[in-house]
Amino acid sequence: MTPDLEPHLANCRDYWLGWGAAARSGGALAYYRSDIAHSQLNGVLRAQDPGRVRQAAEAMGDVPWLWWVGPDSAGGIADELVRHGAELAGAMPIMAVDLDRLAPVEQPAGLEIAPVDALEEWVNAYGPSFGVTGDLIDEAVRNESARTDDARIVRLVGRIDGRAVGTALLYDAHGVAGVYVVATAEPYRRRGIGAALTAAALQAGRERGLAIGTLQASGMGAPVYRRMGFVEVGEYRLFSPPPRTG
Image 1: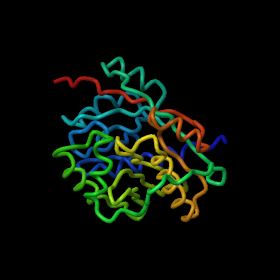
Image 2: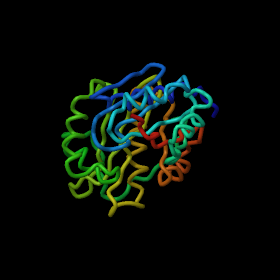
Image 3: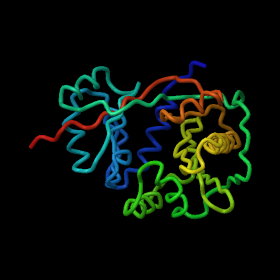
């Protein structure tokens, strides 16, 4: 599969822009700022001009944040970031799957998957996997509650014996099924729970008439997604921000 990447990138941008309760821009310099003290919850998603580094730093203020450099960013932006003192923090493959070719996923014994009833349970379920703990939990719940795009979202929780052990989210935008917030509680990993939740999110997308799934994979998740039929179609490189100058 050689997809048009723009729907995948636009789906990603729109999902993360939904975290911009404090500030956001979806233009040539696309960024979101939740003001939660967590680098993944504040970031620059796209810069179509390499000269925007200083402007981006000013827009992000003092919160921890990351700069995403993907196929929709200007050529040379990574070199410009490094020139200003940014450091490569990691990379995430952009992966896609034709939903008609999704490999079957076995449901782990005892796992029940259902839409989320309460955002507090949702955030507490995914929080530890993403480093959202302590006081950040309440802030994340408030930010989730403030999103204006819930019509596009299906939040799913997986429970075993009534305990929330995993999460996944469908984001329906730009004609593709974006999958986000795939997390499994540490004692329950390597049982296929993440794959089952991912498949459930994609099924929710299929029920909405979507034909293609898209996600950005972690190092732990990528092998699982490949087994499900996902292929790599691009990459985001994540940079820690350059130091602020006075």
